[in-house]
Image (cartoon, rainbow, N blue to C red; front, side, top):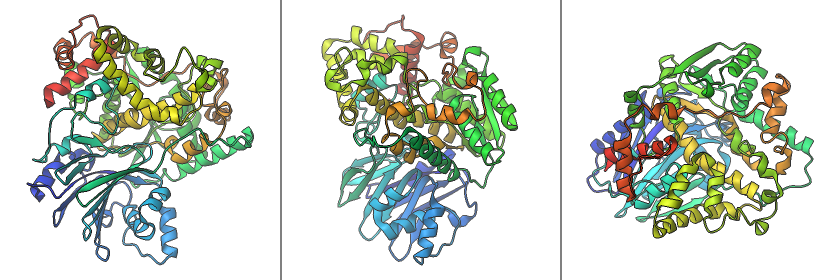
Length: 578
C-alpha cells in the first residue's frame, strides 16, 4: 500500500519536481521513498510497508533485461498463487512481496492476461524504457485512485490530484460541468475531475501512452445479461460461501498489526465471523457518537462477546476547526459526511499502532442491501420497456430522486430553481452517466444495483481510501473481491434478495450459525455522522454563498442541512483551489 507519481516527456521535468509531487502524498507511504529518472521519464514511489518489510520489496522495480520499470499502489492478494506458477516456469525471486511477482507475471503473460489473473486493489504504472511506452491500470472496484493529465504529448500521473498540481506544467483551468456532476452524485465520478485537462482513470480500465498519444481500454465490466438459470439456490449459496472464504484467505496476511472496523452491522460481522471460523483473533475497533441514533454499539458488543475479540471503542466528536481541517485533506469536493468520522477513526487507529484495517465495505452493493420493499414490486422487476412512472431514460428527475432519496432536497433545488437551459445541462449529464447501466440491465432493479456499484467505485471507495490513507492506514474489504461480483451477476436476484428478507440473504444465512434472528434481521442502519447536529453549529453561510456564486444560482439561506453540507464542501474546495 503506497503512493505513486511520475511524468513522461514533460517540459520543466526534474527529480526535484518529482520529489515535490511525492511530498504531497507522503502520507500514503511514509516508510520509504524512491525517485528514479530514465531519459525523459521520472517515476516515484512512497512506501507503506505491509508485506515483506525488507528493502527487497521497495519500488520502483527495474528489470534490466527488458528495460521495464514497475511501481504500483495497493496489494495483489493472490500473489502467492501467481508466484507458485512462475516458480514452476523457472523464474527466481529476490523478495517475499507482491511487486516482484506482479512484474514477472507481466513479463510472462503480457498486459491483458496479467490483468485477468491478478486479484487485488491497485493502481499500476509500467514504463518500457526502450519503447517510451507508459501503461497505467486501475483495479476493478476502484479501490485505489489514479489521476493523470495528458497535455502537449506528455503525461503526468499520481495517486492523488494534489500531487499532480505540484508539477509546473499542470493546467489548473476548472471544468464547469464537474460542479454539476458533484451536485447530482455527491462527488465527481471518473473519468472527470474538477479540472478540465485532468482525468481519473476509471475502475477496471487501463491506459497506454505511446508515440505521444494515449489509448484507453476497459478490461472488466459487470452485466446482468449472462444469467445462468440452471443453477439451484443451494448450489449458488455453497459456491458463494466458498468464494467468500477464498476472498478472506488471500487477504488475511500482513506483517504488521491489523484490526477490524466493527460496527455491529451485517457486513462487518461477517468479517468478524471469518476470522473466528479460522481461530484467528483480531482486535476490533468500534466508533461511537454522542448522538445515539448514529450508534450500533450494542450490536458490536454482542459480536465482541460472541467471538471473544479484544475491543477498543473510539468516541467521535469534532469541533469546527477539526471538521474544516479534515475537509481540507480532500483533493476534490465530496458530499458524503461519513468521510469525516472515518478519517477521525483512522487518525486514532494509527495512534493505537495499527497499519491494516479490515472492513465490511461492499456487502450492500454486492447483494442488494440498498433495495427497499418497493423495489420488488412488478413496476421494478418487469423489463424496461414496460416502465412508465420511473422511466430512467431522458434523465427523469423522479428516478434520480428515487435512486438517491437521501439527497432529495438537492434534486428539488435543481429542478425548481435552475433555469430550463441549466436543467438541460444537468439532465444531459444524468443521461450520459446512466446509459451504460441501462445497457447492461434488463429491469429497474438490476439497473439500481449497477448504479449502487457505480457509487461504490466512484464515491464510497474514494471515501475509504482518502480517510484511511490520510493517516497511512491500509483498508482491506473481503466483500469487494471481483469474483464475488462476477458470480452474483450470473445467478437470479431472488436467490439473495427478496421482499420479505430484503437484500444480503446469503450473508444473513451464514450468520444464522452464530446469532439469533433478532440480531440479523433488524432494520438496516448505515454508518454515518449526524451532520445535522454539526451544521447548525458551523459558520457555513460564507461557503454556501461561494458555491452558489460559482454555480450561478441564487443564494438560498433556507437550504436543508444535508444540502448545506453539499455547498459547504464545494465552497471550502473552491476557496482553497480557485
